[in-house]
Image 1 (cartoon, rainbow, N blue to C red):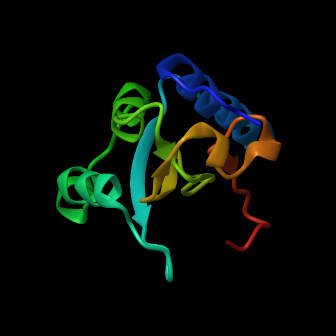
Image 2 (image 1 turned 90 degrees about the vertical axis):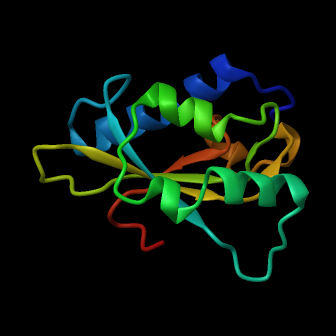
Amino acid sequence: MIKYMNFDSFRGYLLKTLDELSTYHKVELGNHSTFIITPVEERGKTLNSTDEYIHRGMLNSDNLEGRFFDVDSVIKMLGCRLPLCPMWVKVSLRDPGDEALIIELQTSLRFRKPSLLQNQETGHPPFIAVFPSQNE
């Protein structure tokens, strides 16, 4: 179980997840990748005041729609309240056959301490690589 999170470990966990996607899709992903961020409102889950603040100020459609991010921007945005992190982040390649490789990050709007994050079994919580065969 992960009990500590800083910017370096958060970045490392994202890059490990990108390595999994790279291997699966046989493409080059990493520090120079292009990302889109898609916040997911979880039915039946309530947001606390920190979650609401992040959602209204940063992780909203007005701020994210039509925008592309580099890895540093992703780390700053999703890691803005470290050691609190999104509960989970699903990482997938948008259109694997497309020349412009875009990585989609579907993220929880609930930010929690490292020991409460989902995807601990991946070794790089809160991130989990999602492959085309996984209908999620």
